Every structure is written in structure tokens, then in C-alpha cells.
Length: 314
Image (cartoon, rainbow, N blue to C red; front, top):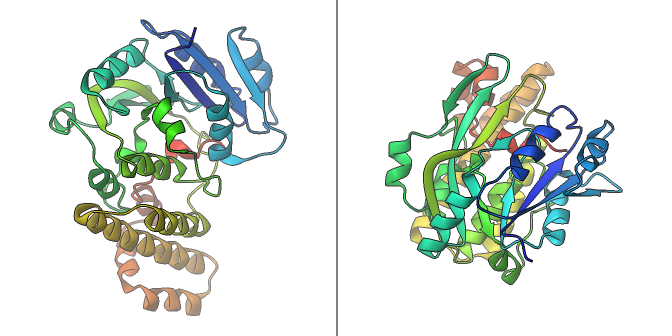
């Protein structure tokens, strides 16, 4: 029998958290699930732990393909009616998928998202990412809404943090896959592409996904090369998808913010490398980047507004 949901979990050196993630997926209530773990050439016990679960399909890649490549391998193997992405660091509440699928099917949607709880594992603190009142008003997310939320420097959290559940038939009908050239932002492009293809995305305001933050869980910091790759991916997206006026306005705003982020990161790099002439050149090319130096660099990097939850598989 076809499962209701295929959980796809990309994992890289996730031995500390993979068991917890898998158990939360298997513990879903009211829906049948298949769990697919794709190991992205880990050097620890991730594969061994994942294979200890009898009901989990484990794919071990022969070479590291990054988060997009690992998830694409899982998508190719998935058979469920719906696709749920789960990061190997994170967990889901037992009733999450039954509630979300019911909402999507009731409203004829091809994508459904929900709220997230953020847990700081070192301190044990827990907070909900988006105000429930805000998401109640945001009953659906359109392409312009989604792009606008992913403007860099705009906010600490954005819709890019959400973990969408996709109708697999829609994904397959339109040949949608993750962009494997991206190590950051691959989730954004897939989500935006689905919306551009006409998918309806509804919002469940209740938190069902738990985003765990622990010391050392993020594999790398944002670098200039990541932003440059995002700019190239956005350019390809623009060529492929026609944009209405609202989406075009949001897209242009995002591009300006990415250009600004690239200039800021180049400026920071030149300053750290003690290359003042190159730093001056970066500032001249985009003077707006200078305004961000008024905030400590670490804090400004955290304010880039990128979904770092998506960077934890390499």
C-alpha cells in the first residue's frame, strides 16, 4: 500500500541526532509513513545508526553531493503521496503530518507549511518562531509573499525556515528537484519554483516542527561564494519562470539585497585579510554595504536572514 508520507532526511555526520530525528518521523500518528535517510558520505556512525531501524530505507551516497543532492536521491526513491523534509538535527511532533495533510486536502493545496519551535539545546530554552496571530492572518503563501520574506538583511527569521510538505504528484508532474549547485538556499529555489508552477500553499499556524540549535551543529558560516551561487540560481529562476508585477517587485528587492550581502561579505573578508585597498574597492562598488559595519560583524552575519537550518548537511 502506498504510504501517506515519505520523510526525506539528508544526513552528514549526524550521529548525535539522527536517531532522534528518525524516531520522531516514525512516531507520526494517523498517517502511514516511509522514512528515507540519505547519508552524504559521513565519516561517523550515521549510516550504522540509521540502519539499526528495520523500517527505515537508508541510501549511502558514493560521493558527497550536498544537501540538495542528498534530498534529490531521497525524492527519486520516495513513493508516498506527500513529501516531508526533515533535517537530521531536528524533530517533528507526532500529530504534525496528519494535521497538515488534512488541511492541504481540505483546501486543495499542493504545499502546506506550519510554524516552528526553536530549541536552544545548551540552555533548554524553547520559543515559537512566528507569532501564531501572524500566521493565522497569513492563511496562504503566494510567490510574491515567499520571495519578499527571503530578502536578505530584512529579518532574523523568514519563510525560508519553514519545512514545506509537498504533494509528490505535483513535484513529479513538474519535474522539480533541488539545485545541487547550491549549498545554501536550495530549499528556497525548490519552494519558489513550485509556487511559480502554480502550486497553492496553505499555512497551519500551529508549531509542528522543532528546530534544534546546538553548539557546533552548523557546519559552516555563510561565505561570499554561497551568495554568488544564490545570485546565479536566482538568475536561472528568473529565466525559467514568468513573474507577475508583485513577484517581480519582490524578486528585484531580493536581488538588491543579495548584491548588498555579497558586497558586505567581500568587505568583511578584505578587512579580516588586512587588505584595505580591496575593502575600499568593495565599498565603492556598493556603498550601502558600509552601513552594516555599524553593527558588530557577527551580529550582522546572523541578521543575513538566511535559513541556516538548511546548511547542516554538506
